[in-house]
Image (cartoon, rainbow, N blue to C red):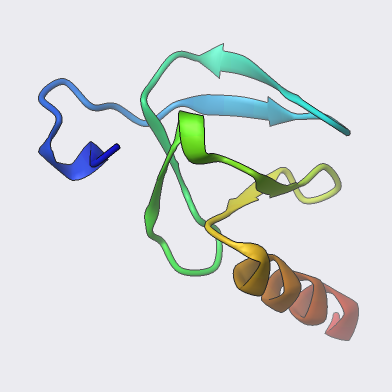
Amino acid sequence: MNIHGLQGASEAKLKYLDADFRVIKPGTFVKCAITGKLISIEELKYWSVERQEAYIDVKASLEAEKTASVR
């Protein structure tokens, strides 16, 4: 799904849970906390329950973990 070409695309607000997420505000995408890239809701696979952030891929997720452990 190419969300950049969709008319009416909007950012969703989600509550990230252990194995799922709950939609707080409907939308078609969320932003990766590390890269800023848009992730369609259908493609969302990586997130942090603790930090309530979404990640585009496992590499971004690992980067977030590294950054968090430094703090």
